[in-house]
Length: 250
Image (cartoon, rainbow, N blue to C red):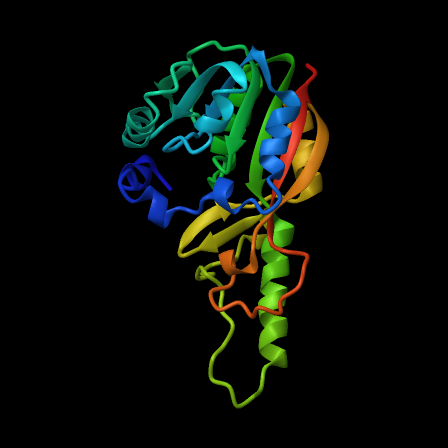
């Protein structure tokens, strides 16, 4: 997904892009934010898009920097949240080495490190690490590879158990196209490759950038977010993203 893709989403973002904040069943992300928040601290939202997290961050922190590489998305956020006077906006491509020097007490990053290119992900993680003070915190939300595989199992299991006379198959909400790089965590959703992470992979990756993982939790969603015609009887565990709270220790 390149900048042009996101630039075109500025007017249709609410209807076309999955709303993590709205669909977080247990409000675990907000709980993680509350754990590190303070009116004396600074925070950044890396990959803020149209700013859905800004009304949550603004009252809890001294100042907020909203960062995105899509200028139209950033402008949409700034227009919508004019009343949040402690929020500033910055157009930065986080998949390129940042020229700016920052030292935030905390950074929130929600499903922004999705590129299938390892080199770009490495730069993004390095930018995160450089922008957080020692003993500061990263709250990272990221797609779960375990959940992607589990969802495919549930779809297959449902279809095997259905009446053989039924012509209606249980289907995913997105078309799984080329999954030849699944072993690398690359899941092609509607022909667009997205990086997904194993829990242990996240802990090791963050450790290599100077973070100590303090918590890894599931951000649970309803089955309807993953399965287009999900049976009401589908049980927990539900599909999830990972949310990680990590402290910058180096």
